[in-house]
Amino acid sequence: MKNKYIIGIDLGGTYLKIALFDSSLRFKEKKFFSTSEFSQPESLIDGIAEAVFEIIKENKLKNSDILGAGLGLPGPIDVKNGVAHFFPNIPGWIDVPVAKILRKKTGLEVFIDNDANLMCLAEFRMGSAKGAKNAVCLTLGTGVGGGLIIEGKLYRGSSYAAGEIGHMPINLKGRPCNCGGFACLESYIGNRRIATLVKKVFKKDIPLDEVSRMAAKNNSKAIRVWEDVGAKLGVALVSVVNLLNPDRIVIGGGVANAGRVLFSKIEEVIITRAMVVQAAKVKVFKAKLGNDAGMLGGALLVKEHSGGL
Ligand SMILES: [Zn+2]
Image: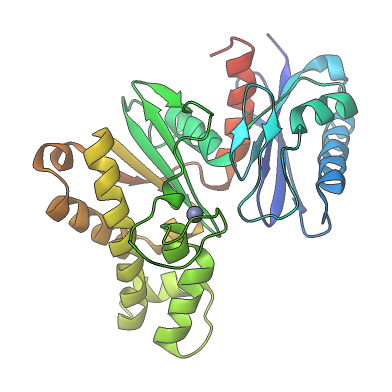
């Protein structure tokens, strides 16, 4: 265990992020690759293997120096068998045995899990959910991911697919969602949907980070956008708070940068609509680890499997 390095990998819709950590989970190196060049699962897995080779070679290490690689993927994962079932926002993946293929290609121990679970694991061990007993973590982006810590442990569910807060319906009728359902939270507050709302409110396209800056300067239209997002997310979280009675909710991803206006609205909805006992206990925090959470979670997954946690 000592002096062994760990590789953490986070695959998102836009970037493949890979990091080399030392055994204390300090970053030794971080690399980002665009995922747009990999249209097929095969080429994407090849790309991941190449990135692994590169980071090992550049740091003058050998495979025997690496404890393993942990990879976060944006969809439901069979954690036990290392199979990615499908990705709601990346087409072409059906029951791909990612861990087995990568083990063969790289010669390393490879473990995979859902990316939001890994973000949640990282925030729980090292970030805003540290010390919590029961926590709910969310990542807001193109998709809306979720992870659950229950009684101090990551809760994966009966087929390892728990925590899909983004696919909780928040209405009887609504837009079809990439998951096969409809009226899912994600179809109301995913980035694409917020961009449509921005266009409606401002009568033009404005990048979401700019809308966040405008809200910080009290622009009333920008505030309207984030209050609308906060109200919808708040309603979904009221159900989560009543169901799980968490002590913390941690919100990450680009949209979390909307700041105070978004968080105030979420808190207001929880306080006014959740049951008194649960609402009094829960606190809402912004995620602490930002873009690093997925890679750190990948490394923590390797530690978990190696008995190092
Ligand atoms: Zn859905």
